[in-house]
Length: 187
Ligand code: 5GP
Ligand code: MG
Ligand code: MG
Image (tube, rainbow, N blue to C red; front, side, top):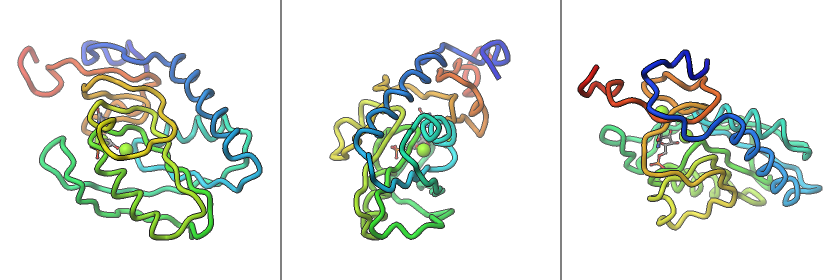
């Protein structure tokens, strides 16, 4: 899927494919340096993290295992509340493992804060976060995201794993939607 397939649903491309791919390589180089000689377990958060997980894992030189969690955060509309339910738990016992959470985006940071305390209680050897995108609100949170791809403005973004009503995940870039898609005027 590309820009042309999106037609007038797309407002603008925020991060082009080439920039995403360059950033993934940068993040992988940092992670390689930090985890040299360690047994790394990447934990992807479904479904948004599938693209960053797949590209990051392939860009790493460090041997890494991959596991997945699916969580749903209760909230009103598009805001998450911090009350999280596990839809799919890890298959892996993370006791004494070096765990790196891989996320698509941190907005309020509530979902990740919950995930961090949940995983920390399982006593991993280490626990860090890699998030491709970070919104301004997350910067104010007391949440240490060690690896951040891009700080973006407070806009709803789609593509490269991120959806609107389960659509647009398979765009190779990150963009914003035209207002008519949200059911607003101008449809
Ligand atoms: P938080 O708990 O940090 O507020 O929200 C985290 C989750 O909300 C993300 O993992 C993502 O699934 C969703 N989310 C937050 N902002 C956006 C956005 O701009 N676009 C999309 N598609 N999802 C978002
Ligand atoms: Mg996510
Ligand atoms: Mg979503």
